[in-house]
Image (cartoon, rainbow, N blue to C red; front, side):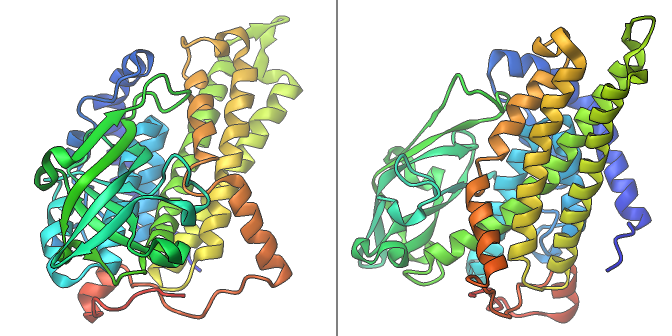
Length: 410
């Protein structure tokens, strides 16, 4: 494995870091305090040209690799979690699901406008009674000729009130449990009044992000909008979540770096007992732990990205990167608040926001407990990944012409 970055990767990450610091960061605190989404978040991603970063150019994407996607997610969350969340659901969940499982017609109709930034994508899986237990979802999709009729609801959906396109999961065979789930692409404009979206308020964290729910009432979806075959929805959801976990891991790494930079700056200028607190050994210990956590988290997501770039199965490595980085980000944010003392307990400094935002990532895209169970099963030999290949990255597909039917089904 070679984790050295190219000049293009470094230049892109540096450029995005400067852009976010200048054009986005100044408005984050006000949106966080008001509990309202960044008003131009998606417009900024479009302006940066990264809404289709890992998708082939023929679908309107940039044709870049997954390590570059990770680097960009790290920079986005360094600025604010809400931006990285938007990138995760737009690309990692919705876009990658369509890219990996969609027909050529579906890629042209749905992926192209998403990649080009003309439409914002989201992902509708979680329900009031179905989170980690995906098989418990209650939304239904009844076949009616060349269409499906969807009924049900979703909750904790990122970009719920802003998204134009949703990858939604419902049971076409309720008696079959998780094997009766199917996936559909739902377009807000075509759905009309049959699709109702709403925002969730007074959240603990990610206050500058759009989080809400969806409700379907006799929503008509053309059969041509079904992703994969009937009953493949659970596998589609799991592969999408795997891509989402990768972006979350990279984002959490950026949050650790934000905690580290804020803590170093404060420790250098805050004076107690006649010297900067950075000269106290216990403060140095906390900062050293953040530094080590950042390096380890970055290596883990780079390893997962390298595997994805080779088209190799990366379920275990991506889950480990997500679990480790999210837990490390939560610890780093808590330690950053400790370093800032009473000031950390206010919104005068950003570390309180970091702590609130870090808590959410431990839960979503597969909770800490789900990741622990997975890795316990791997270690015990109860879980063994089949030696199948994931879709190659866009640049390799462009060169090699990998067929669209190349799917991960293991």
